[in-house]
Length: 431
Ligand SMILES: *Cc1c(COP(=O)(O)O)cnc(C)c1O
Image: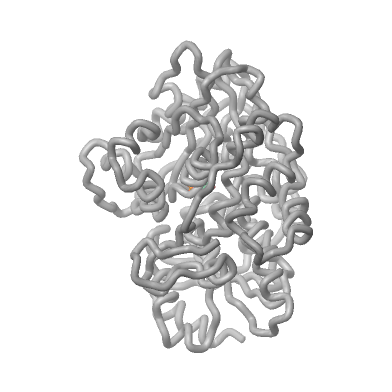
């Protein structure tokens, strides 16, 4: 399988090169040359398959022959070592809980898959790779955890100072070893811009092999398509049309869901639910894409004003707005509405949703469900990751799971960064 750049000037590359490079040299995102649907029997018998088998069948064509079957299955077994349950919330609504991994947000699967692929590609190589990543909250922790102790890989995480939750900050600043956290005086978009700039700066890349671990990296992005198949497997016997609402920031997760759909997964409609960062919602109204500065909200992992993956979504629909509109809707909700949803979900069903999941729930409600439809919203993080907001909004005490207790007592270590020049100095001076 080869990948082309969505800017269409860089040469096509193999899976391994796309993973190692992250972004194409012409600054475009990599995109698979071909997406071949799986046979209908795969989906008809999906409930007889275990998660690793499902994942292997779905990802195999994207990896091609660059990782041998046995190795790829071992990677998937390792990556998918926890559950992805659909929990009923209302009569025709369930939530797909994606937070049962080590950092309790859905990014664990992508981060772990990418770390293990990179570890495999680097197995005989003594050249160190530096993973440079910007985080709006959860990516940092998932990447730090996924890459911790991986030989030959250094991880540098940029996060916006004061704009991530206490637990998120601890998850990315307390691990040590090959992980360094840079605390940026700015918002997420500033972090993302610095990362993009560093990739194109030959005065850095002549000395260091840099790669990204944001959802621009295909190994971070593509494995997220598994979730949608795991949900379908659990809901298939209901015999209903499935509508999925995905709380979206960089639009990587929902874009992976649309890839699953292209592979033949029966999903009727995709709803992108956003907070007040409504760039895509505006696009769906105006057909004009106008990136905006990101706004801080209570669902901070979605505070993205210029979602990287939207261009991939357009490509998946052949850049045809009408066909995009048939399968995809987008809605935005402010913080007050999100808090009301957290309260009403709890009051009516005793389910404690985190702010991101609540935005997903709102998306489903706003879109509406027809008679033969069943809706799922993705619970992308455990409520404990947004403890202050959850406990002040919903009168409930959230028990602290073991994964989180481990980081609570540890001391934060970060390096303050004010400007791109400081990032560059850090990268060039670190050994
Ligand atoms: C990253 C994240 C999102 C947004 O996912 P995208 O793939 O960037 O759209 C939503 N919720 C949580 C909890 C996240 O960590």
